[in-house]
Image (cartoon, helix red, strand yellow):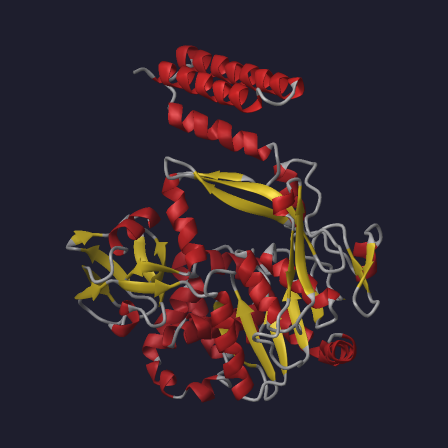
Length: 531
């Protein structure tokens, strides 16, 4: 049967269903059905003209997929059609695991290079290290491999084998390793550690199926180390599963308080979500750090903590993604992620910001470089709401912080060096040559990137022939020290240490610590008013 006949049959079937479904109702619905039939005919007319007269032969599947995507873009920025081949990868991010060898990697100059073995993975167990290069997979050259080919060749069923050939910096000859694939976790808690003797820090990177469980483990560990106040970092966390956002907020809020609610066109999309006393932690002061990349589930947590006077929100106004999507499976293995409701914080603030200007403007405005100089500047035209204790908070999209701390901008030199992965390569080289540092992790906290090390770094990048002046290097000095130390730590241990040392030199984190007296006051409000 021809493609044309199949599509015409589909149109007829859809129209028939509409007529049958609405025939027992009223004339208004029959008119709507006729109009939909006319619109589908109009699409088919354009489609067939393109197939007949376009300068090149068109890919029917690609064109129809594009039409579906274009239709959804007209609704809102977050309703999307997900092709079957992409759905599995997206689902893995929410499931919190996949099956493979367990490496973070980058393809550098067409060479598959390990950034870090994932903790607890087969690769870590076999001693693979950051900077190791996989030059062959099952005896075939991996030079020029693509990311998708890496997934195809290194992921596979649990218990299956794959042989890789490793070239390690500092060794003359490559060597073979046979790795048994296993379940690989995709972590939500990127790192957690004690900043000082009373301040715990947790960096939450996503909201997946294991987020609540991972955070619980991190909090208990920090509390056992004497944590008396918590800095929860949600910067760059674009969200994820609603139930995990509720579970995270529930850990800090006493029972029977509304965490978030949803409202939509259909009654079944309306829901209110309340806190419990299931896993509530002690009422220690909390600061939540957000930025322009904090969205969706991150905003649910920040909004609830702010509205219920449980903690202090610092950083920059968040992204403003407050639309609820339901994922509807399609028969061909693809899925439709369709907006069905909107999120509101306990005080009634709509998290979603306006998107009337089109999808490009929507994203550009979220990440523009025009930062307000104060909270007053950023809230002048925003509607006012009130927290449980009567503090002012602001609507209009996103979560406006209580304290504005602007993101540190990367210097020109640091941005260039990072894009060339110069810090990563130097960290790998330095850690290989000074691997004795790994023997005493406690002393590494005081490890200093000296001017001599900076000079070594500059020599190591001469082959890149970068156009960076001495003045640009001087401007990037402090940032280079932070990135170099973090990369050395990653190569000595793992990615969690990398994030730890990045954060210990992070100016937003350092400045946020100054506001714990205010967070303590907020916690006091919580003690008196939240039962």
